[in-house]
Every structure is written in C-alpha cells, then in structure tokens.
Length: 413
Image 1: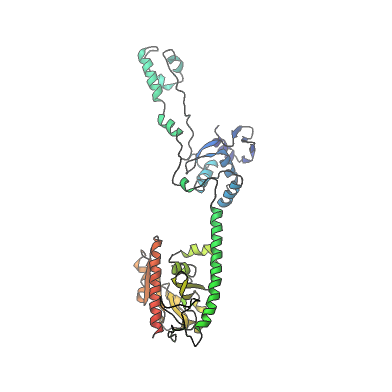
Image 2: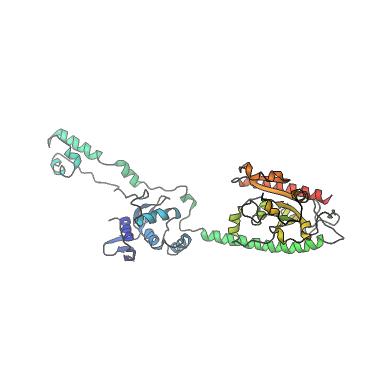
C-alpha cells in the first residue's frame, strides 16, 4: 500500500495514535513502515508533492488555527500544508470524499515492456487480453507482428511523460521563500506603525494645546491662513498675518464625521484620507486599531512635508459639543440621513449648510438613488473609486480646496 492510502485508512478508522515515528520512519502499527521523507501522491496547489511527514503532522494538528499550526510546524522544521490545501486534503483523509484531482499516483518512469517473440505468444496469451484478440496461429509472421503492435499500443506514453514532469515554479511559488513565514514580520511591522501613530498623536496633542492658547489671545487673534503665507518657526503664522475671526470660534476648528460604519469617511479613516490622500475602508482600519475608537482625531493640512498650514479636530459625537464649540465647527461629512442632524443647534438644513460646509463621500459607481436626498442639500458630493486608490489624493485635495475656500469666505464676512 502507498503512504497516502495507508494514512487515509488509519485516519478514517480513528487510529492516528498508532502512527509512530521511529528514527526516520513512520510505523503504521505493525502493518506498514514508510520513510518520513517519502513523497505521497497528494500534490499541492503550488505544484509540489506533500511528504508523508507533512501530512501526518497536519492531520494530527488540523484542529488548531492555521497561524498557530504554521508557527508550530516551523518550530519542528516540518514543511507545512498551505491554507488553500487544508480543507480538501482533510476531507480526503477523513473519507468525506472518495478522490480528488490533487491525487496523482505515480506511474513507473521506466515500465518494462515484455519482449514478446514467436515462442512467447502462447505464454502471454492467458494473461494479456491484447493477445487474446489475435486470431493468427502462433508462430506465424502475422501473429508476431500483431503481438508487437498491440503490446506497444497498450502503453500510455502520455501518462509516462506526465508522471516524469515536475513543475519548477508557478506564480504563487515565485512569491514565497522556503522555510520562511512572513506572518511575524507583518505583525512586527504593524506594531511599529501603531506605535508611530501613538507618538505622533501625543506630539500633535501637545502642540495643539499651545497653539490653541496662542490663537485665543486677544492681541494676536490668529485665524485661518492661506497656502503661501509666511509661517513662524513654530509652524504658526507670524503676527502680521491677522484675519478676522469674529465669525469663527476661537481655537482649533472642528470637522464632524458620522459615527455610523455605513458611511465612507469615519473617525477611523479620516486622517489617512485627508492627510495622505489614501482611502482605507473603515472596517479594515478599525481592525488595525483593534477597535480602540478615538474621541478626537487631529488632521493637518500641510504646506510642505514639514510645514503645517492648519490643524483641525475631527469628532463624531455632536452631542458632546458645548455651545461655544459649535462656533468652531466648519465642516461636516454627511451620512445622507435626516437623523444625523437631530438636536443640532440650527433650525433647518439651510441654516446648517450656510454656516457649515457639507461633504458627501460616495463611490463613483454607486446608484443615483443613494445620493437622492443629499442632492436636495447644499453639500459638495465627492466621488472616489472602489479600486483605483491612486485617485484618492485628487478627491482629498478637492475637499481641502473647497474647505479652505469656505473658511476664507466665512472669515471675511
């Protein structure tokens, strides 16, 4: 019996505990013994034949999570079963399916073809059905020719050739390194990125406290400024750039976003979109942040890499705003639902979008019906692609341009 069939037989019977490794061999009770490195007939989707050692280790550990299984196999220095192969392989070994296309029982690479001569025709006639069809008398010239032709026709040369072939590389194996697992690299990189974001958040928070105090000082009255205005060493405009702030509350301006996940821009992904021009789906970003939803996020419009033009606070809880905080609200990303504006200190939509600029984010191929209500409001509709991430930056710049234009007009009214 071949190693794969023996392993399937013991798995179906629930006798995996009788498969014991002794040195470089696996002993299947007292029935069979195979080398650990023996190739089985089960071919991976990556093209290689799994060894008996790999299959035995997998079938005995299939119940654990794939990431834990990979780490354990790597520790034991045993090649692992890939994720796409796990389910079909287990179903075959447990007897849930009778066969699978992944199984390739090897045809002998050098099959011995009997040299049937005149004297051997009678000897092979009882066993060889191809010779039973020969009606020429033994020893005749026709019988000899027919036996040779039929004997060679019975050999499947295509199967012999395919059995000898071994794929060297495919598009999946080209992206992999043997004996390497990039899961730990990904986790380490993610942790470093999260730590960087935390440090930047603390730095921005400390800077904004000082900036808010400066902006609230009567003698300076610092307000919004345009790209190209001369900035001081600390990133704030020099005192000569004084603008009228009477129509905008003192302090850092506020942008409101919906708290619902069904909108494209939320407090989870607003920073990457406005600062970096990259749209990351909310559910993806929330998983990266491990569900730790921030109360407030600071976004910055930059004149260059190291020169900040303006900073904004982004919040998603309007009910937590104080009366004086509403004077600092300059923009809102709308959900397209009336209840978003419940208990807002304005009498109607006309007053809201006269004092606050509204943005509605949508995918460019969404139906017109999704924006039917929004089109009745005085808001700016910004469209992005579902798949073409390189177009996100243009959409983010459009938001900044319209926001700054609105702020300038509001500051001078």
